[in-house]
Image (cartoon, rainbow, N blue to C red; front, side, top):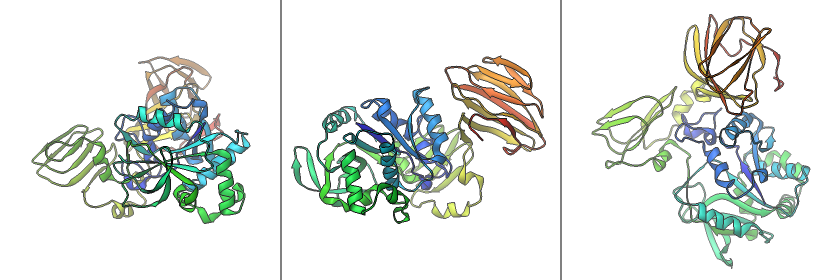
Length: 434
């Protein structure tokens, strides 16, 4: 059995929690771990890590690799990297092409899952039973997994008659049904390949290259295959977060209908969603509003409208595209503060990774290690720094930061100079080919 995790969604309507360059499945604004990380932890309980494959576009590879390291350490993931995001349906097709190239057994059972859902309650026993049930899935059909206990999802399914045991026939997608589609699909590898080739009358490679299916969901294909689809009710509490108002479903309510998260104080306030990630938010005498505070943005709205018009007004603003944390092949950095001639960052370097050998013409840097061990090269000198030790990088000095240890390296970097920008960099060598 192989679990295929689809990681390519954008979730732009969830701004400012997600951004164009930080999709919602990788955001950790609301949760301690991202939805992507929770997905991996959830399914890795039932399938060996080497049987889990992550499908994502090339532009997401830094998110994926850094967040895998955060929860699984140095274990490498099976990566299936699309050139660019083209929608869930074509991501599935691309994954099949990759599995064929890697000579995966055509009799394998494939389980396709999303990476952007919130799961609540005690679902472990239900998932264990589900995986035991599908481990030897022998029907030449697609199994669509639904739940009669969903909180909110995008698609709902109407059942047909009972097919066998706990499996039912698929009737159609129907918003009036109470069976929410979990986006978990089970099918034998060779059967899915045959279905796709027969339905679209072309090879997998031609199908992937076709522009006719750009941006399509996998549900488009399921709708075409009605007679070859079965349904199983997993009966778990699941929520798709597609807008700011959906967050209210994952934050506990007080006795006045307020959903409060973080350092929040309210008085004479009701039916409001207030989320603080860093600063104190004090609210008095309001009703029916959303307040979302992130390190770089405070968003306030009525809880009865969406943010589409505001997003149009923000076109061209840096905050629309990126937050304070940026991911790189070696790890990530978070901007703590910045001014006209300085910037302060927290830099995290994953175990065994290194930044490029580089120099800056317009700024010097101070590095202080707060966790782990740093190997630092400054011109022709090499030194090792432990927690609470520091070094200074003058302007124009060639330098490199490496993590030779087994745990993430964290440093605080203070940049000072007349020009503070990411384009003030000259690279001399880089293991990532930049």
